[in-house]
Image (cartoon, rainbow, N blue to C red; front, side, top):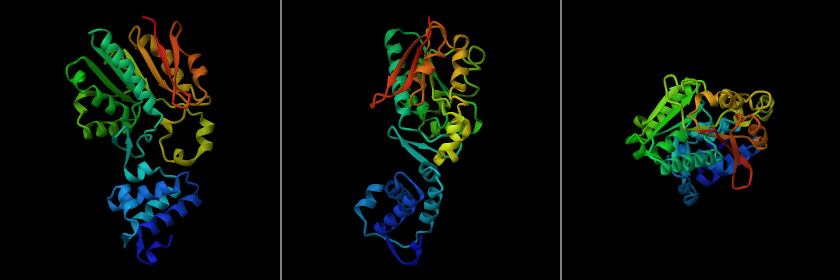
Length: 297
């Protein structure tokens, strides 16, 4: 990039970084450059914008991160964290980067858990399947800290990947809620009714991208764990496996909340267990991104 040939200002570094990333195909080149430079300098992005004339005497670390970003490595991996619902979630190649659309799944989980707590006094078991980085489980534990401490709610976070589960545990610990969540290495709900209770609320962001689309899309998909993305030939293989085991593994009358891809709502409704109610939760653009399955009591 050539920034090291002379003393560079913050403005120069951002401009040069933006050009590099734009040429590499980044959809947000300037934002990426600003975030990476702020990370290298140990400053907030707002500081960069307020001090464009500040000197940058050594840009080697910045250049190294730009080159990795130009190769499509996610900014969250390069910085080591992602801001998600005002939380700093540790991120690396062990799990997917938390997406903004998963906030809708989290909010649907809050609605369901809160409604059940208001309805009766029985203890509730909520289970996040495929927790990944643990972003949703961490946010839920913070939201229901008192209910969890009192035994009013039990929260389980599971994942098939031991590496992802390790990252989730690190995030729970970083936010001081590790003692409030049961962490389990499991294939979907396999321990339910055996070593763990059957859940009343299931929250799941399972792989739902078709295999050929994972291959074709490239970008950050090249760096994130395929096991968390690849949903098989039609994108529904893992979702289908979960819905098949729901009648046996979930509690009677349980509600299951599934994040889905664009255009998958009808197909997911078609694989719901017999007798279940099905509704779609739309995002702000009116696109169905969460399917709610209510099991018969």
